[in-house]
Length: 267
Image 1: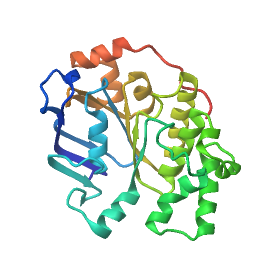
Image 2: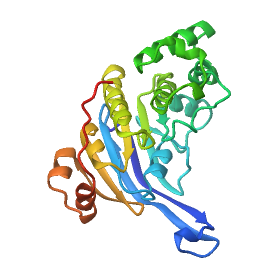
Image 3: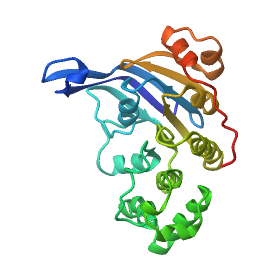
Image 4: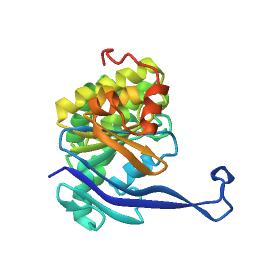
């Protein structure tokens, strides 16, 4: 049984923006009848251009966005029909790493407060236990425990993203949606974050949905690749198959359009 299963998920947003090429009060179908599975311990790379529905799909899996129709099953549990204590338990196991390391951290909070906040919300650990857990995670993501006393503005973009990763790990989740976590970073820093995520997957037995518009990054990190265009999945398969013999023209175009990247830098 897969750890995560999406069954025929769809989501439509209302739009008043002319950029979508429609009149005020029109609608945008962000995700259209999408089904996929994610096996425990794997990385499923979800790739496609901006506006293809990738982030909306990832957020629906975590119930951060409510779908119009469909089902989300996590480890045999119906996510969309869970509530109260059941939903709280599920949320501990499902976390997100956001795209923007500059906007996703509260500038008024210290790193310790940011990383410990999920534990406080869920009532886990004593105060000293939370601080110890936070210090352990600082080291795990490549930062010194002294970073806990500092504020987000004192860090670079890559360091802030490491803080965001620590926050995502603090409740010991099993499944993480990484929503374009390196797209706001320069190439060298981004490659370090990608390698860090790979190491953390081994260390913490994580399952990833890794969302990206970069086929080389997804090819490096993912066991399987799902290609999304205009709200629909157009191709899904093992990484070797998708990158060596893509069947869909859109997948072929993505592979042809993105240059190779060096991702072997140390974390």
